[in-house]
Image (cartoon, rainbow, N blue to C red; front, side, top):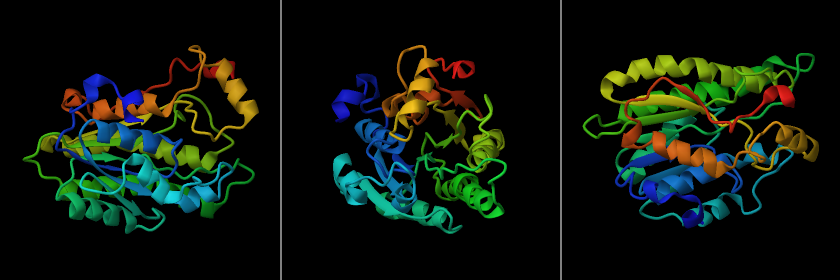
Length: 271
C-alpha cells in the first residue's frame, strides 16, 4: 500500500522523527493516508481516532474498526501506536500527546487532522452544536498545539505543526455552519500560533485540502463538484498526505503561519 502512494523522494525524509496524527479512523480518510505517508518516510507515528463520531455520520465507521485501521498501517509496534480519545473532553489533547511521549520518548510533528462534521443551516443551528463543534475542531487544535509545545525538545530540529481548515474562506458553507465557523477559527489561529512558536524553531501551518474523495459525498454532490474540478477528478487522500509529509520535513523549515490551498484548481463558481 505504501509503495503505490509514496514518492521515492519522501522515503527516509523523516527518519527518527515522532509524529502524532489525529483523526485516523477510516481507511478511506485523509488521516489514514497521512499516517501511512509519514510511516513510509521513516517517522514513528501515534495515530488517534474517535470512531463513535463516524458511526453517527451517513458514511459510518470503518468496518474493520480501530484495530483494523492499525493493522492496515502495519500493526502496533516500535514505530506505530494508537490511542482513542474524544476531543469534546478538554483533557483529551493532553492525553494524546502524553501517549506519544510515553510510547516514543519525544514528539516532533503534530498533524491535527481530526474534525467533527456538522450539517446545520441558520434555521437549524443550536448553541449545543456550535459549542461541541468548536470544542472538537478549534479548541482541541489549540490545546494539542499547547501540549506539543510543552513537550517538544528544541534541541531536536524539525518541530512541525499542521492544522486543517476547509475552504470556508474561499466560498460560503451555509448548510454546515458549525463546521464552517470552527474551521474559520482554525484558519485565523494559524498565524498567531505560528508567531508564538517560531522563535523556538517550530513551524505552524494549515492545509485546506479542497474536495477530497473519502466516501462522504452522495452521488449528486460527487457529480456536481466533479464538474468544477478541472483535472477531471476529486482530490485523493494521497494528494493531501504528500503535502503534509513535505510540511513535516526539513524542506519546509522557512514556511510558517500559512494556510495552503491545495485544491487542484477547484472552480467553486461552477458547482
